[in-house]
Image (cartoon, rainbow, N blue to C red; front, side):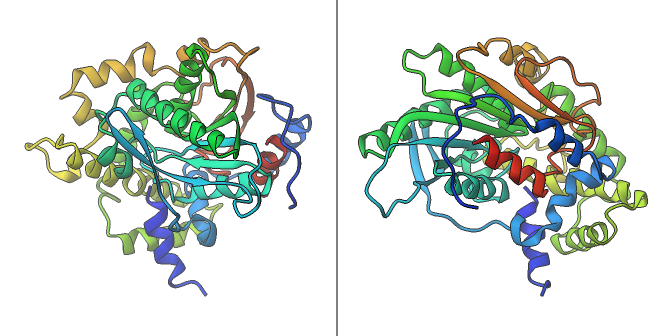
Length: 376
């Protein structure tokens, strides 16, 4: 996402001990009520919350990491695989598998954050690129915008990677799956695929800031694009960074909410959608790049529209297919998440609902890091 570029620009101008792996699979820690109370104690407006993580320059900037190719039937998926204490004699560990948010590379801040969490808690960690990222689109050989095919490819790659780690004596074959945003939706589908498998790997799944209904989430992003097109629209990286600095200096200023909305949509989604479409040669010849939205693509591809707006585009459709007894799922999301409609339906799983937080706007909050450490 735009994290990498903007925070790198800002960075250029800006001068725990491990514990045993959790037995409480698929449930949030017992102090979750207290944690939510802390999280709701201070908050920003929804879009400002959603871009605030970019203010944590040192944490948000992308950093290179060794790439491993995971072969799949249609190509390969580049992943970052980090084995805990790789220099020591092999030890069979559980593995955290991470699928970050839409357009995120495997080296972006989300993957990097969860790699750090996994390492300090004695896990192996595998970070995938998001299926809409250039890394995935260029190499996986999957049609753009097919959540089921994306999940099947990622699950195939997980099976290969875990098998390789087991052979080396570095894995006990157990996976703890974690997804963020669109990656959380992918994770929900993968959970179902794993339950259908003769040799299941996944012991629990964690979904963070998932879209409740994919089609409606895309409509929300499109609405932000169209309503901020005149005031924000396409901006250079330098100009986006300038606007981000304004927001970072006055996070609680309501007057910056529209600016944050433009930055969220035009900086975090639109240019990366264009890049993915170019790779797949799906960019309509009758559209200027600045006019590209999710709707403009879905209108030209009815099969994609059916996928996103039908049952397969509903999170609960996939959650209801997973048995909470054999494959527990826990979910963390906020009521004011800007990709959802403010109404959170009853979801299957152990749900922790924040009143405030925007769309994964709590990424670098201390309470979130503590929660993740206590959850793995």
